[in-house]
Amino acid sequence: MLHWLRKARGADAVPPDYRPSHSHRFRIAEKPTAGEIGRRAAAHPYWYHSFYFDTGEAIRGYYDMGADVDGYGFPAAMKGLRVLDVGTASGWFAFYFEQQGADVTATDVRSDEDLDAYGRWQKPQPPTVSQGTDEEGRPLWWRPTSGPLWMIRDLLGSRVAFRNVPVAELSLEHFGAGAKPFDLVFMGALLLHLRDPIGALIGARRVCRGKVIASTIVSDAQATAPPAQVLMDTKPTDRPWGAWWLPNEACFRHWFTAAGFRDPDVSRRVHLPVDQPQTEEEAETAGTGITLRVGSADV
Image (cartoon, rainbow, N blue to C red):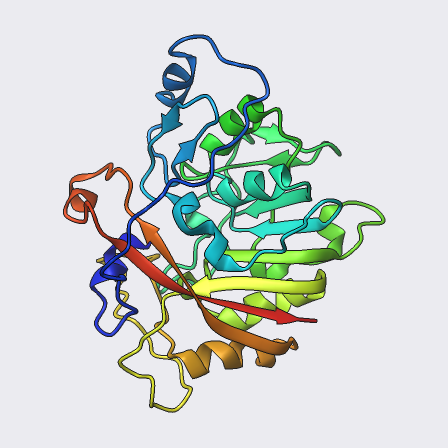
């Protein structure tokens, strides 16, 4: 959903000397047979994230999340940490955290109908037939963007848990009896797609006992403007669940403090390169990408 925002006026620019490194490769649990990864990947029509593996194989998605992963400022040691990946899509960050030693839970909405669409005021009903159940027997759904998560989970021998929870409704009750707060809550490029980004951060605050890290496109052109949000031109006939907000740096910082976090730092930037466009619209952006501002704050 982010690709059209590369053209947003005043958004952070792509570094002119940027070169993706594909530095992170996932460890596969058991070596697959020749061509197995490709055959299994072909069952999923859309790959939002690219996955590069230690076997030398890859599934080429739209964004290569691992090319600049060190820029997020994740903890150097994650063994034993409880981590929540909010809005996981196909799960790249959830699996990354797990392979750094964390105990990971991922969340996403049930379908695209659950996204914050312009003009929608009623909460959609869940799809009629669930696609699975969690360990407590509750139904689970996943949308096309998050469908590949289950293939990668199996391929990596992963134990990442999954929940259908809208970000604004985050509470410990969704994570089982006796669930403890998370040490790290991560939100990728999610806040700009939500009608209420502060409410989303409040949801993260309810389930966090350590640090939240979130990213968004930030407008450098409005750097000297007051810290007020700017509504994007999102229209129901155009892109109903596109982007709502293009904050400046000051606004992005205020979102964290407004949600009850301490000492926000919004100084980091990461670049998400386009790896392999998968639609004609995306093909126009080959060789480019987006630069995100990364914010972090403590409870």
